[in-house]
Image (cartoon, rainbow over all chains, first blue to last red; front, side, top):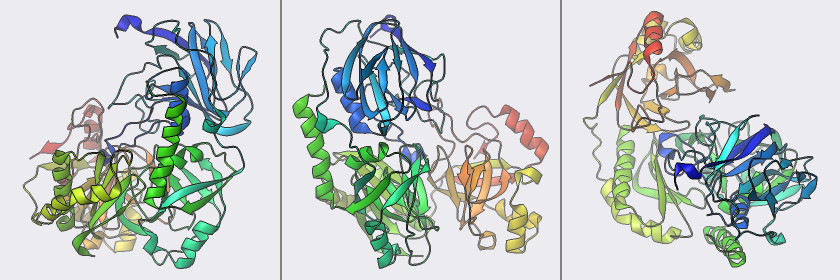
Length: 320
Length: 243
């Protein structure tokens, strides 16, 4: 695609709390200390792209809790998935999991949160920002990727590389089974360990039998939980090692921290468990104050749960 | 301090497995980790997404939709055997000489370190600049090196409550290691100096100043020299002497 096909597609009128350009992330650089970044709720992100018939990894906007106000600068198909943040196109409500047709001058705005935490906006053709180390994702902490390495601000203009009026798109709704879970308490599955032997038996019992609450000190780097303290055998410090996406660290104070998309790639505190890949998407949608509990599964169960949802999505609509 | 007879493999997430060669911050263990990382890098096993070598273990991230855990463990076996033969001797790696100012505002924890170790600050600086250290791993934040082993005399504990903010370039020590914080970050290690050199540069092919296996010698500089280098240090290697 030539430079000439780049067209200004949206202008940010107000940015919301945290609106960033994201794709599926930037694998391959954790050994240099570079976290993968990327969409927190991968499934909703991919679903947004499938709705407008984009390739699965096309860049979307991820908006958090208080959404932006956006003016469309050209005619395009778009889609919204993930959290219900009372979006409207001009005066028309847009429920999550819907496609829409915007014309130049149309306004997309967000209102009060109904459920969830993060919404995804896709446009046909995707948002065209530079590919850095193989990804368009914004790494806010390190200040690179996405649009100028930062969260969007008032006055930012984003581009797309699509042909205008992709007639193949249409008004379509994401089936209910692919929408995010609603509720105020969520159960996530974990793989136990690798440091389970560093905890007292009752510490493990505490972890698996308690309800924890996501605190407001939670962001794309990680979630701090509050709840019953988990007893270590002795020291909470280990020789620094890889902290994969979803790792549940328990530092000395005894309450868990879940490490997410912009976490430190290595860590020196005991990891009691790691949230399975499928359920990271549930985490992404938990609002501070809501509850979380942990259930241990084995690898084959974790992989089955992960595979099944992608197969289900594919039976609805194949990737492009 | 433990060096395992056989590497220990276990899951580290549902798409990662961790191969541990020991439970210590030593060069003999780290050499095995790095040897395995090199072998697997060239082997390009199916379904393997990335390799994260650290002090004493290597985490292999894989896509469970492409390869299952048990098959991957099997594929790894010949490489594990070979990695166990890594020499414990230090290889002839490059030596990077890094300027550090240990003065005043750059060393907010120097007094604590002196109190804890019962050493004069001159002695702390002399020890920290005495001989080349070894880079065990990069991690935590982009380009952050974990360097050691630290002399026993400098062994201070982590802060009970980590700082919410450590300045860029802060040189810190604790639990047998020394790090340089590349970017303002929370951190619990004791800061005894600051370096003006850049540790991470996105448009440099190497991306990071350090590589695991490098040797590092810290050189004490005055605040004036620090400021002069800082003014010049726009990219990797500025202000760094490589031998």
